[in-house]
Image (cartoon, rainbow, N blue to C red; front, side, top):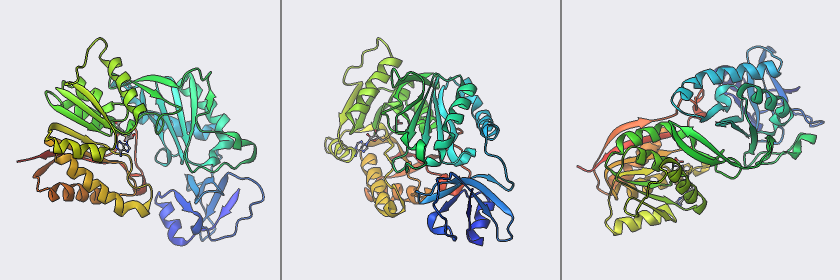
Length: 398
Ligand code: SAH
């Protein structure tokens, strides 16, 4: 096992639950003789502090698996973590939800590993190649615990492909199952959705917005809805289920818009949607919002759920400018409620809200905050850096 030395300050942080060590924080020279996927940290008194995943090729080179006392990392360890994670999510099934996050990485004790369930398909997304040597063991466990039909592997964009024989893994690989179709149907609050677990964004669906979609359903009755960054139509289906008058979707991705139509048909079979009740606009959200404004079109409920505007710390300032600009453009076509969300981990909560208010204020539009929301129960957060999802519901106008 690789032995890692770090500063006393970082030792203290890790003792309190912070789970990461970056390469520049490693104080000893580590010989890269053979691939090794586990590392250990002893404190300045040479007492065991933490055991974790070691990834020699990544900037984020160490992720804590176990704190405080040494443990063998084996099936028993993984099973324990998986079962604790399952208990937290049990109530979702009773609410008619078969698509949810089973393991939220570090926050469920399995760092750099996300496991999403879509009915009897599991999608395993890895953020570090240090998991590769454990994959067979994990798949066996997942199948036993979930009786899953297939397990699909998704790899984070910047994952390094080390670990010798294990380096053959690729994004979208079917680890278990026949791989006949990448389309899977699941339920969320008894509504039905189709996901492409191989080609879809993230693991196929934005499971983290489930609670907000439910809120939108509750406030949609008789309203006209503008769903900006609609992806596969999650918010639209909920709004229609809540009895909204009409939905206009905006997204730049034709594949997403097409999937949204399929989800619409799946939930409302036989129902026709004339253009005044449902339409889609393909293109850049900022341009389309500007066009709607110049046409003096207004919507009772505007949903703004963009992709992450800040992919790293360096992009924070420009992301805040974009959030402000978007909120302004959204408020300019809103005549009732504006919902604004951010999924950028590098944009702190209060900075985001300030940007939204600055944007709306700059257009001279009055607003009142109705609610703020954060993470759903299947996306628990155990350390500050893991908090990424924030959103506000605002009443627009006098
Ligand atoms: N609200 C969605 C998730 C949104 S994901 C849900 O609940 O499922 C972000 C979406 O924004 C993606 O579908 C992506 O295609 C779209 N997108 C990214 N940049 C865009 C832009 N400039 N204009 C319009 N859509 C964009």
